[in-house]
Length: 281
Image (tube, rainbow, N blue to C red; front, side):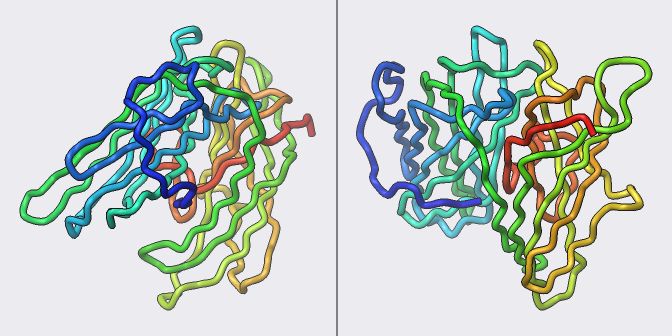
């Protein structure tokens, strides 16, 4: 997901302290990477919205990517995400990375943040830039719909997650529920090749000082197959949960034409994310 949030190339030195409300910038030959001094942490505490702005020279890239990482000393929380490809045309483009906690939830306050952008050009040309420093997490609302045209099938999707979901099938032994039922509204149109569309969902929630996850396996008999007629249709996705998911808030991520077993990196950056209220069904 690509958003042009800023075209200004700011000039503050990398490594600025968290007391300054200014971005952290890394300069390298052909690449400028900017990360923010403040980021939004979801109310679920397991996901952070990490925008990275990249300006890179046009090498006629064969491939390119941006990678972001967060670690928090006071909680031990870590998380990473990556997005590919990026646009290298000499202009600034901002990419929103959805960073999920690996094993421990995040908390409001300071984190160490870093980002790297790399472009692989023709004739073995490679240019890389990075930025790192302290950033502040501030708890806030997260509701980012997926708006994607896939490069391979050229199907177009707008996917919006519902604000509430239900939990069912409580574990006889262990803590939590075995399944969540999450509504998603999908508006899609097929590309010229007629490939069957599909969307999968992942879920992550805090479980004490740990995190628990879930995903929507395609082998479920009721796995939704979207109707792509250009109008919105709402489907209910059954998400298989690992032990530890209970009523409260969770972060649900959207993956268009991709199936991930968990929301954490090294799976690709989510196409969309929403904080969802989980209720006992």
